[in-house]
Image (tube, rainbow, N blue to C red; front, top):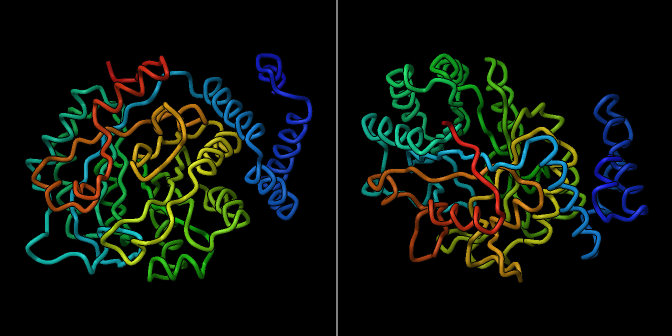
Length: 364
């Protein structure tokens, strides 16, 4: 902290608040004590005026540079099924939106080709995700077994929803080292209202992935109606409570037209950037993604810079380029062109590189 203090024009008063937060955080992690005081400190930063928010993001970026380096880690994303058995109110892939003629499950051939494309582009990590569709798990396992010789040191991460212990173990044996299971909000009544699923079931599934030896990644959303700063402070702490390792994310809520929350307000982008900075301060060695929806036209940053760049400047360090084949995209709700959903492409990454004057961390 002293080194950071010397290299940035950050006030003594601000650093005292940061030092207090870190001390409370370290105590909480070690002893599980002082939660109330910690939450008060987190809420104070979440309520930050513009000047303090700017300092918070500067600090997040400086810690990122010191602990993770200045290069932006390139992760390849492949979606493999638009089938989901869950009916989340905020998600366009919810169960009620799917009819049999829209079902799109990737073939093993296309999945192998998509992962190879990500490898050829230099991705150091490949993130495979789908709706909660247990039928697609074996397709992924077969593809990973076919690619074992080519994957080398590339990390494979998946997010396929809540599975059973046998499926988690099969994924681990096929080479998956990290399983991502987002909790979205740790406010239990809010979680269960939004997901129409019990919070305890999601927690149990998160622990199930860990039980077979995979690291757990997770994340949450900013901007649900009725969400308070206290809720967000609890979310920041819940990541630690669940022993999340190496990766955590935060996303700004953007309403989807084809969901029950279509007319809800867009989440607070400034608060989302502040949470990225707080995640970097609390979890300095984690990978923190630039939210894939950062460049959405629905989000107003009041800045000439792209949303992706602003997220990087707050402390994020990874960018997810999409390698999903067109055969799957055509039925995948997140690619609804009419609703102008952003997809992270090479073009948007090129703009990120230009605006940040940084390079990609890629496989050579």
